[in-house]
Amino acid sequence: MERVFVNQLRKGQNFEGFFLAKEKTVSKTKTGNPYLSLHLADRTGEIEGRVWDKAADFGSLFEKDDIIKVQGEVDEFQGTLQLRILRLRKAAAAEINVTDFLPKTARDLD
Image 1 (cartoon, rainbow, N blue to C red):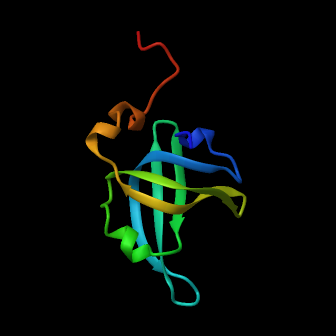
Image 2: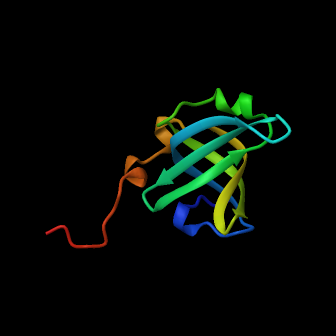
C-alpha cells in the first residue's frame, strides 16, 4: 500500500499514512459502544478519523500531538471525507520526516 497525504485521499480508497494526531477523544455510539474520534493532519491538510473497533486498545497506543501510522479506508460522512481507521500505532522517529507535518507555501520565500 502506498503512503498518502491528506490531499491525496479519495472516497473508497484504502490508504496508509503518517499523521499528526491533533485531537483524540473517546466517545460512545448510540448503542453505548466506545469509539475513538481523531483529528489528523499533515502538511497538506486535516481530516477526521474514527476507530470503531477496539477503540480502547488503540487509544492507549498514543497521545494527542503524537505522529501515528494509520491504515484504513476513506469514507464520506455528511459530504465530508472521513477515515475509517482499521490499524494504527505510534510512529518511530526513524520513520518520519518532520517537514511532512509543517505548513508549506507555494510562494517564493524571498
